[in-house]
Image (cartoon, rainbow, N blue to C red; front, side, top):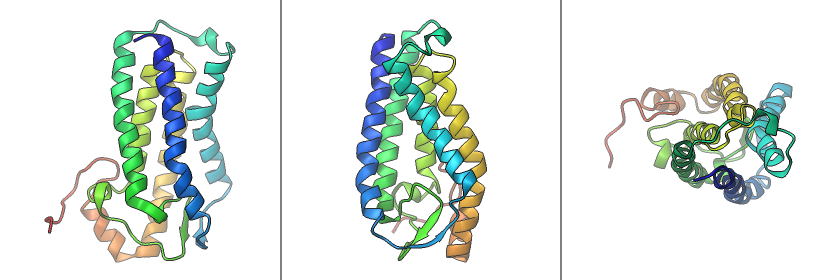
Length: 199
């Protein structure tokens, strides 16, 4: 594993995540929005996450502008980042698959949206966020650059801590006691909590 291959793995993940997400985004556009918490803070947080996880790695791959922040690449970090990225991509795909038309890139509820508690959502309320945390850890390992490597962790960390409480409040408003009970038996991004027996 060398620096170029490690960066290539991150770029492949950026492409793959777009291929996974695009069909859901296109289908979702056709469904009427019932309520939305998409405000300036939400737009800024989404922009920062895109900057840290996609734009900066693409700039780094295409130019030498950020090379001044490079440090010595370690092959073990590249291999570890690759395996973590594979787990991230599987969980990212599975989260979209299990959500189906209930997925949204932003804080909104659309017509006929239901509460998804099956598949990876059975034990985690936010497996997609878990996949993005894994992505950011992988990025930090794959890119030996003091700016680009941790950029995802910083940007997404800010988004996660500011957004999730608002998202869960929105879900409680929409689904009430059903969501409150779901919160009791599931973890936020780790599969903790008491789970009902499988039928």
